[in-house]
Amino acid sequence: MVELVPSLLRQELTSLAEKDERIDGRGRWESRDIELETNCLYNAEGSAKVTWGGTIIYAGVKFEMRTPWPDRPTQGSLMCGAELRPVAGRKYEPGPPSPQSIELGRVVDRGIRESGCIDMDALCIIPGEKVLGIMIDIHVLSDKGNIFDACALGAIAALRTAIVPAERFDIGEDYPLAVSMTPTMCSFTRVGGRYVLDANEEEELGGDERIHITLGDEGHLHSLQKGLKGTFTPAEFDEILGVAQQRCAELAELVNSKEE
Amino acid sequence: MGGYGDVQLLRDDGLRLDGRKVDEMREVKVEAGVLPAADGSAWVKHGLNVAVCAVYGPMEAHPRKIQRQDRAVIDVRYNMAPFSTSDRIRPGFNRRSREISKVTAEALESVVLVERYPRSKIRVEIEILAAEAGTRCVGITAAAVALADAGIPMRDLIVGVASGKIEDTVVLDLDKAEDNYGQADLPMGILPTTGEIAFLQMDGDLSVEEYNTCMEYNLKAAKEIHELMVDALKRRYIEKNGGEA
Image 1 (cartoon, rainbow over the protein chains, first blue to last red):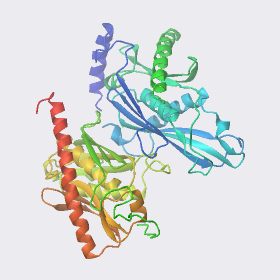
Image 2: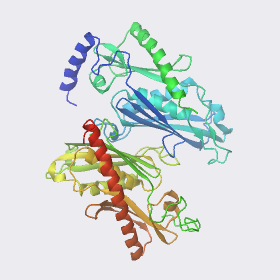
Image 3: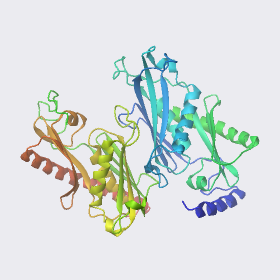
Image 4: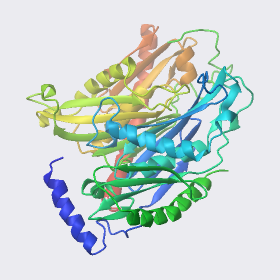
């Protein structure tokens, strides 16, 4: 992308910010519309499609039977990865995983893992020999801004609707995976000098640093990440954390409403 | 083809395991314009297969060595999502997806009016989200609709279809079990208006008569799918124009 476009866009976003407006007419803490669909992929043991404004992602859960790590013989494992393939937008190129996609996958992974929503000991089949590995793969199909929140939402929704294919592994009947919590993510981007919730593509292009906050059921923090160049003050963080508390609870409610 | 003959694939009443007749296709659904980030896009569900395709371009061809002075190049990536099969696939390209990408690109180059866009590149991204035999054909169908949705001129809407042989009987549109335990598979990319073929692969064992029956089934199926593709594009056109045709 030519540098000229972001700098003109930056001027536009700054003048809008002075009037406390956003480029698509939303309020500062207003999200775009979200549609969440679960159990939408044949072959995945848990799946979700998230349509977040113009951003579209799919998340799929697969299980594998593996030998445990020697230092944790009674624990299964969880891995979450995100792919930013060229399908997602003009700016994405083919090639090995980009630093950006690795960051995305790892931030989503941490939020889920650190919330403790999966009991790793419950994934043990035979101590020291056989444990279940859970793999969440996120596929970004259309990036129109804020893929982080969409991916986190899809990942937890897919996980919460996952069925362990026990019959395929010869360990009894299929059963729903126990997930004790619904961690969700809220991301803020500095646009025109102040933070806004759920930045769209233009706001990301003409904006500055971003902050990702993942909160669990009690409003506890489970994962934080600051990305891109820029700094923020403790007072700014307090303000967005307050917004995140409310927003994450709404997102968790959306996920929980999809379960039978 | 697996060809391990012990599995019964035809029922005693002559129908297939999922109740289809020998010349009956799985249900096909087509939507155009499903990905806001893309210049053109399509979603195709064929039986349990789901493919999504995004088209970007025509754009500047990079790296420069791929440029052609007299035409556009078509850069196809066929990719299966890690969760698209019963055993998870490790992300990234493999020999199979590279081969399919290559022959699909060549098929599309034979229908797109590439000479209209010298030195440029058209990116076609085919993502398989759920796989149950026949994904390369579903990918071709999705690519054709996505290219049309992107407004790229073509000689025809190419359609991906396949026939094959199970228990010495020619059948249209193999499903997973039939693909695994059948005797032959003949996927094709057909231009339904003229009946020309732009994509062809085959493996297994077919007599000339059996091949001819496959060809007949494929042509018939291509015409049926073509209608669904045109309908999807019409719906998309009406939607884009605020409800007016």
